[in-house]
Amino acid sequence: MRFERGRGSGGFYWWLMQRVTGILLLPAFLAHYIVTHINTAHYVEYEKIAERVASPTWKFVNVLFLTIVLLHGFYGVWNVLLDYLSKKPGLRIILFSIIVTLGFALYVLGLVTIIPFSA
Image (cartoon, rainbow, N blue to C red; front, side, top):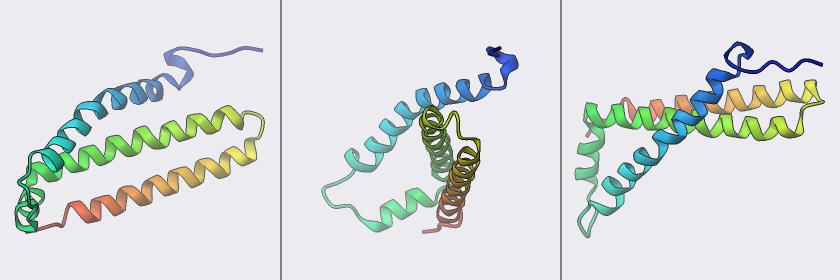
């Protein structure tokens, strides 16, 4: 039995993506939390939030945050499932298809919400 490891095995880049997105999530989440929940007046006004969310900079930030969260989260779920499905290739294919479909659907839903938004 031979186990392939390293960059030639095909898993290195996914492993690296999981680590990079994990590192990027902490400052992205903190910035999101500070801007959204802490750095606001006592009363949250729709107009101010809509103006901020409609700007191209915040659209880019929100799309980037959405991408990082979905990649990190769904790949993490897939890794957990791989621990339990190593001997069941048929079930792996079905669950992988469900994860990819759900991830893609949530990504499209997020993009449809973020990109056309205007104040």
